Length: 514
Image (cartoon, rainbow, N blue to C red; front, side):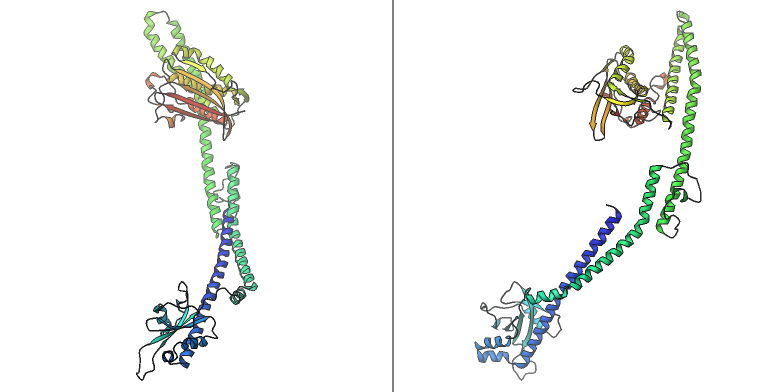
């Protein structure tokens, strides 16, 4: 979900909550109004009763049981109320209720004292003697005996309870009137207007961000083109970023900042490309220039070795020539590898691909290394995994490059493997989430690779100090696996390596299957 959609939904949800809150507040206000109106009506009723009948306690003593009928007549025109006569401790002495109360029944005196006090109250909630599980609006008046004393003590209370009316038809009508159609329509109009206004403001604010995101995505897809002018003081113009001219707008400032950053990145990228081009061109030229003298040096050393062959007096000289010749060959291979890697790094390099059975390619490469493996005492074999038919691993590859990659892997396995070991070549087809792949696996039973060296094996010119003796001139120069990795990348594949010291190494070249 986009940011704009999230904001729109948030605004709509907030508007609905606001409308529900207003309706709930109206209902609560209506309920409070009902409580207050009931309390004021009950308090006024008790005031009239106590003013007209100032000696209610004396009347109870004179009338006895007929006093309940007298109280019932008082509330005859107040059908939603019950009237009780209480003693100072809250015991019910007389009542107008239909339900008979237990002997010595008492009500909570707290609400009675609040309702009968001199401080004005909005309303008071107290006990309903007929239903003690519900609190209702109550009113009370203190009753004092007729006496010539200036301030006689309270002898009782006249306690009035308003019956909860429930959701009657009249209250339903009143509530419906309060929530009438004009009110609901007005609420909906207010919500719609505020939501629309907020949505318009959101769209106005986020539209420049959307345009800027689209422009940055376009630049990401097209890349940092060198065809655009490098204007130092006009960072936004080459990229056609929206709103970049508005210097007083935050999005305009952001666009200009992104434009300046892109300009800096493009300058740095252009500088890196030039340096990389000079590096590749220099390595390629150096490799080309060194091949001829190295070839000539090798030829001269081989001539000396042949000339001194059979002369016992020259045996020491021949040993020196052999060392020089071996190092010359190593240098020649290094120069060739550097040249090949520089050629593979060229952006204009193109593969010459064809569909090939990788199993057959492994058979051909194994034949080339068979004699060398025999001399080293290593068993070199090709085999298909169990259940994998021969010839099923098909891929569209550049044959020469893949042969070079497999040859480099076998060369490394022979170079670092121990005598009496084994090297196994396998080609198979595998299915995974990225699609079908053709896997070429080269596994050996050599000493393995130290864990510290594993992250750096594909780095160029990296050599493990545990396996290379620089003084002898033997071993690789750190370009073999780098070349294999580059070949895999050119084919859209990848190179992985797993090794455990003492248990051998498994190198897997994964290529898209054909």
